[in-house]
Length: 262
Image 1 (cartoon, rainbow, N blue to C red):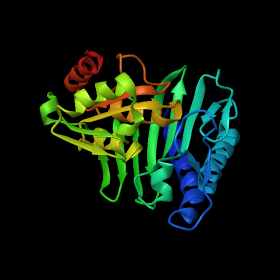
Image 2: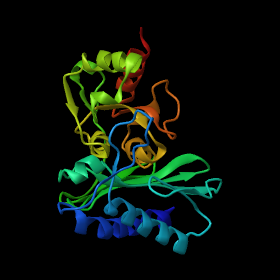
Image 3: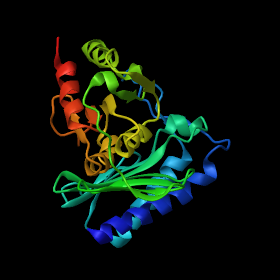
């Protein structure tokens, strides 16, 4: 595992080198939304594609037997023991708006289970990483161990979601039940909000409609910091869908019950 942890940094370096020349510059933005799907604007840029291409090239060079699942270029060898799950820019909407709350997500599944992950933010120079047993940070604040904070009650919790527009029908009602009970609810930040859970600044993230590449990299970070990540029924969140991330297991259980209540 130590060599794979070091490889995370190599992948992050390559992605950042591909992305940063395009941040806060005029660029073409394509809409990946397929007609008739009902999905909202789904942007992609040259930076997304260049970063994923760079990471795939490194994986192919150093670990040719490993599989890859990436947002921009799909999957290969996903039956391998080790599968890298890549989102070159999680938060492309923030990226094209010039707001630095996007990040490169680099996750590794071992025998189907998230085992290693990193969120790298090349503009701020921050990296949040974990292996499910421990989590760590490196950036302008130096190097330190990540630890989620204790928060047992929703009334004391800070909640994030990317946008309430993620939820429809009964899911929206369920989310509103949670939001109505927390101390503070904030929107936006995509992957950055999950890292704030691991760092002990935020208590809870509730989202829906995620893909595997949106969450696999973040699971080992939050778990390594002492938190919990599941789907809304308490099962694995590795395939995405409706996800809850909490810094405190007691808060997590209460949130799951509230999401499930009529």
